[in-house]
Length: 73
Image (tube, rainbow, N blue to C red; front, side, top):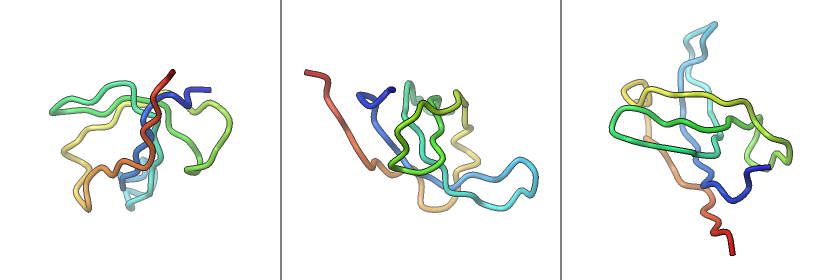
């Protein structure tokens, strides 16, 4: 499990319906164009998520919110 990665939340269009859907992602990288990481089914999921890449320009409402920042000790 990638619990040492920051967990963020944002709304992103569903690929089938194009309606906004809340996404929970353990972030590997984030730059001025993309967020990449592991999408979880909900914020407290305990299993590894699916690797995905999101375009920041499609995150229009409320932006990206940090939910958890864990530091590996």
